[in-house]
Length: 356
Image 1 (tube, rainbow, N blue to C red):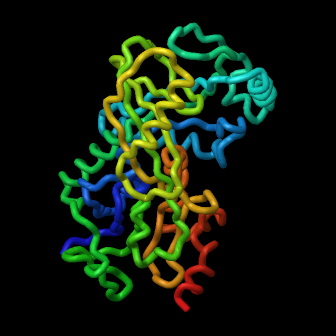
Image 2 (cartoon, rainbow, N blue to C red):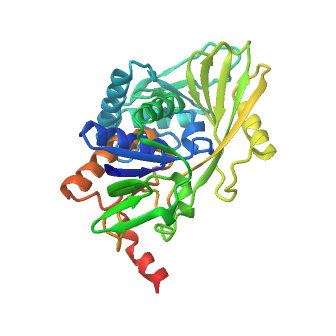
Image 3 (tube, rainbow, N blue to C red):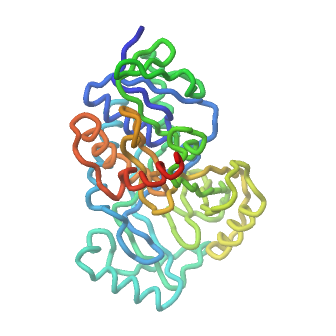
């Protein structure tokens, strides 16, 4: 029987980043996931930025999160001799004099000066409508998440530390302060299933709501865009005249099927920004693991010792996951208190209500 310190269930963004942290700390990790199933991480565009651009405000705890994200990405690239991170500015399309003024006021604030350029830039691209200029946002970029997940999974597979299957709760047995899962003996189990958590009987009491997002990929030889733009949708250059455009937010539909409604919505918003012809070549969908109070879900089960959760990273999972993975490691190994805003203990009352 093979022994592990941790069994991690789910190899999306959360599971990969936490497993990477544990391996860096010389822990033995077994990861279980069904490679072929669709997941939000595998279709995500991988963009990050430090601000909420609707209101020109900083993201929650962004100053703490950015250094951990950069450290994680540098480490991952060096370990795997692989380029997955492209750091470049994001340009917010300004739609009115009022937005120009709001940008200027926000960029003058000391707390935002590291992120926002105080100059409004003109943009001479006949294919893009930008009559009121662009606001430049620093500390933004893109990570090739699907490549990152694939490379990490292949590393685990080569070491026989990956099980390509749906996790079976029936096969998890608690025996003398440890767990037996099939032919493996494990000290602690961490569930990182994303929206799949709704089918997990252990944590089904938690208010994971999920938001469906759809994206389109377009081909537009006349657009000639070399900047990451954000208006009512983002436009991400992929190279060779291909661009990713998104994303929708749907709180009701929990399927992973692409829809005509989302495509038409994205086209309508895209055509508010560009004036040149384009062809849609792909459409994808995924469900983000969002929570009612917009904070992550991490901690230990209120009743089952050594069963943990690391989930609910939402729309900014790339930015926040390395920072939270360090917190989670310190909690798992050293009992350091988690941020109360993220600790699932805030929902213990729901567990006991449902149980009774």
